[in-house]
Image (tube, rainbow, N blue to C red; front, side, top):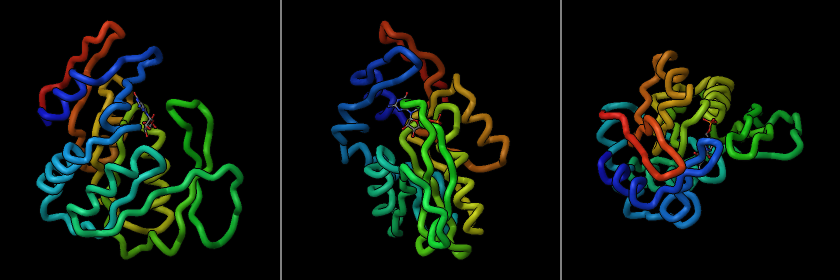
Length: 192
Ligand code: 5GP
């Protein structure tokens, strides 16, 4: 999506460790107008799919996913990071390694809000090595729900997550795919 690529070029900052900071429009301050354009693009790309729920993970996926849920007219559920896992019967649980912080989180979603009747569109801000998405897919599978697709704002195409997901045969729509980036500010996008 051209508008997103242009915004990343203008306002994105490349940090060491292959981290792209987009704090001024996605991860801290949020540009809701841009989120609305992204949501419309996913609506077009996933047209005809029987999506009845949006799933994301806290914290940075929530803003985008909320706007997407509005566009699709369905509820949004976010998987919660919990410090201590309570192995109870009310939640599905999985473990996710955080790309930016390195640590492993237990992540839960209530059985009330994800069921085998659900047809889920997963939304997140970034795709790097795919740990967050693998965890979300695990939760969906535990619930017996169906994944209709995955929408990612920014995929870092030089990391392995995108290939892992596409190999599973899941429709993955990343609105901007970064092929390479360097700390002097040069960012190259994949032609889509
Ligand atoms: P993965 O689990 O695919 O390795 O990483 C995805 C998660 O890590 C995303 O939910 C996002 O929050 C965070 N992340 C990964 N790479 C970046 C990055 O370059 N910039 C920012 N801001 N977050 C990232």
